Length: 249
Image (tube, rainbow, N blue to C red; front, side, top):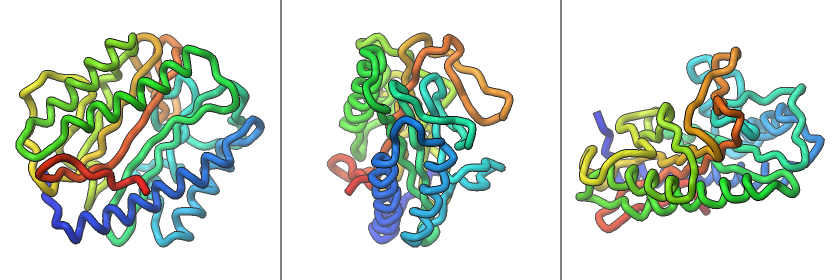
């Protein structure tokens, strides 16, 4: 079942999303060579709780971290560790989810650690662009597949791999709800968008081939060819004439 949220509920999701957004702003200032991912995870948990939220990721299906922290060839679900230290030239994705007053929000962003190479610059720039070109397709009365198709088209135009095993999703009462929001597909397919739907759109693209694998921790997803990956995500509400970002300012 796809949930339709009232304006009052969407406002609470937006408040949750603001905590998520502010957590991103706080953590990105901490990202530098020599910092452990466990420190970033700990600071994320403290920030969310101090602002009235609960880290949605913590304990979700057994996940051990407050947020997901994925470096270089890690696509998603990397776990903060004292043994993992950020280095100059890394790219790191912070996937932050907040539960606030019974409603979840979800936003991921990829960040450069110091100076990165051209390949990573290209990947990050066009993955973020892919998110926004997909969002532009969203409004009530059009099929969800239009956004999926647009993201895939844009990614392929710029030589990036589109991960298929991982998709966006509905979000609200639960962290993951219907419908799935793939980053690939065909125009004029998929569920018809309606006002009040809330979805997380999240291109996960690679600089090499799209194939992925899971590490032995049963969480971290990496590219099979070792190429870097980037991930950008917003939670948005569907409106009559477009969409509203709920994980921004």
